[in-house]
Image (cartoon, rainbow, N blue to C red; front, side):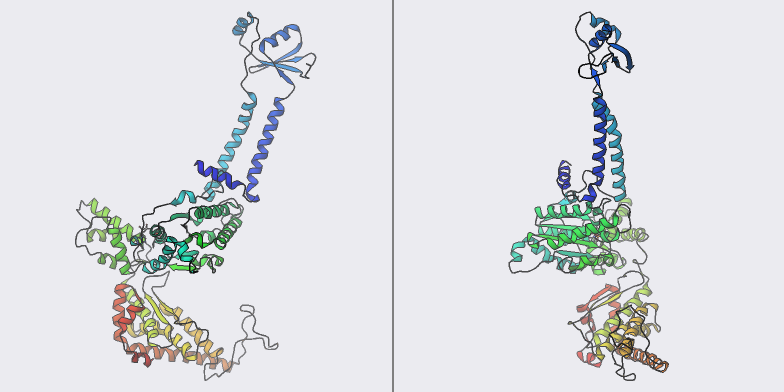
Length: 622
Ligand code: ADP
């Protein structure tokens, strides 16, 4: 604690002006009180011993006596040489005074220091008010205290010798592979920089809560054997403007002093979220200042020192774009909910901590915990152990897991957990429709991953594609193939289930947009011809207005409008027909892939290719 107070004092000199305002107020009040007390004290009163007071009274120097509490004061007939008009003494009780008088020596009762007492009694309420105010502001802002304003709490969160290793984090192999580089760098920053290799300064871990982002960050520190500073984004935001910024500065200073080190900022989005919370207390300005300071630190620090900043968010969309620019959090790693194999691996990690009955097949647990994140699984293992203990079992069995799942599922959002069987089949068929179409078309982007792990509201799966190379221009064939891949989900649904579902709405909208662009903008439709119907200002011939400036002008006749509609529709229909034919020819592959995807929940490019196993001659057929 003493250390943190010192830190606060050192910080004080750098506090921005806005933040010193409360201190100025307090100082002024204190000075006013001191001055008042001092003036009162130096009023023209001469204090004296009680014996002298009696003597002067007897001598007739005093014309009026006043007694207030313990103090007896007398008004002097003529002022004393030093200008005093009154002399005062503290009363001595009569029996004692009588006794003392006999000895003919001066005697007095020393009054308690009224100066100090007065000061205290004035300042005490003031201090109480300040304390209450600090407490309240701390409550409102969730952190901070008046004395430790600028000091970062990172000190409290610094840990050395972290025991977490990559083996403790399961089911996130891609993320681990990417972070291995950071570990290598931290182990030997100088060696790494030898060939000019640039390590990312900031790595952003993106993913839902409980998927192990914090655990991963700790594992990086553990693997590299470096100090680990962690702080939550929300802890930066204080009620007083400038505190968050001072805290950021302090955090980086400490990390540099302890380098090599990792700084981990959880809930990075809190810096982007707080905007309107305390408009009067300067919340907005505070957020901006804190964010700016973070950017300054990010831009200014030299990675060769051996400090790497890791941050986590589950809401990347609300992050300030400035954070994601090159040289800042320029590496982003997705930490997603685990698939079945991932869940099994995570269950194994946590099952080590309990006594598992021999022969318990954790894969069966993995199979029925669709949508569980790592934290849910850790919790599940613990719950199963509790159930087993309560039943006086010798070891935890599958039955205990099942009971625990029943208890837990109620607490996990429905949309993520245990999607119904029919919907999963539909999702798997739909996603593989996209994937197989893409695989069959030579010009389409490569399929990187197919997944039916529930993702956000309404999305039951996704197919990720990656372009094989950078492309700036697309030929007519390539645009057509894009439309076909988009329609692949719809085609597969109709092919397998006899009718489409609402899940294809997004795909249809995108496919239709592309087809319309082919007709209206790219001159790719023979019936319409090489004419652009994009509404640009007719008279001036100037380039089209920036997007959103004007509603697009319709520059075609009603007759052409009909032709355009027909052309768009027939493009879509033709593409759908080709896609359906293509999938029909691969129906057995589709069924095979669907059953594997249902089991594994996600397939990467390699899995898919080995499942498809079709000779390249099929590709040519597309
Ligand atoms: P996040 O930071 O993504 O919200 P955490 O890292 O705090 O998630 O995870 C909370 C806990 O859940 C961890 O301490 C760990 O016990 C467990 N957990 C989460 N993900 C994993 C994983 N991939 N492997 C093993 N355990 C995990």
